Image 1: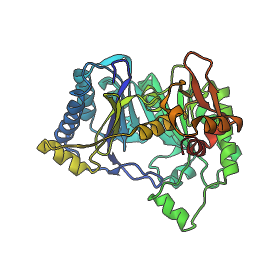
Image 2: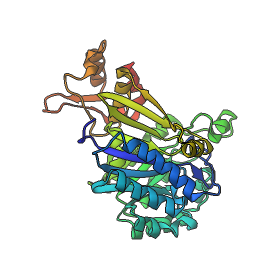
Image 3: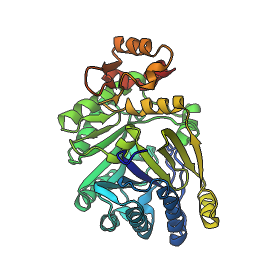
Length: 384
């Protein structure tokens, strides 16, 4: 691990007002919060990792969840202050907080901004009431519109999410909804195709035949429409699901996609750190009560595993090929030492799914637009 490697912190807030039927994150229904207990546990977690990553400054701090905009403001303030004390922030560091477009959360935007949050990520998910009801959201489309406007007044940088490929959604309907979203003028949008995750309420509904997702051809058309409309609006894709104006890309998520170093704190948070040339995978205790109890007792709060070279390579390719610009892949990369690597690469290039520029001083491997549509298959054929 070098000081030049970007370093970020992810803080997982595990509580939500309700559990969305498509969500498979480590989340729990909201409950009464002990501010001192939660602040103390999270800061102890941060101190543990600060002792192992000293001398580096943070490029980003990201509050995710769950719904961190429901966390007590004092907890957010204390975490930001602790990160400033333990590491310090690089100039222009990004501090993002996720929130939802409910009235209760909108009233708190100014407080979060005063605490140091400089980027807000809103879980809008749709600008259509019937879709929001289907997705189990606790806001309406008009709430979302008001929240986007309120967020733009409180923060210089905002982003919001939309989910497409919903049952019954048409291509024309998606184009209309996305056009409306682009008209808000946000510098960043995340556009996610609805996926049916195992163990979720949606997975059970699909298994019972209550509804079915759109066919693959319509999903592909919706993906293509997103590329067209966002590019025309000046927010081209820079990652499979993420679109931004120049300079508005998510600095925190770029750490993930470029396989940088990030610390995960809070229940169920994951982290990746480079230690003595190897890749350390970390995961905190998942249940909030276990996490708080371990912190109170001074007991271990994390599982730590050194990844094998093959595991780290798989993660690096899985992240890097999500980016439109691709990933660096020089001729001396360990990938080329694996059996049949060059043949697999050449075959995927010939199929129009990958592109490899080895003439530049820093060679680059990238997925083509067709390759990004079926990236899981490309990765399987490249690394399998």
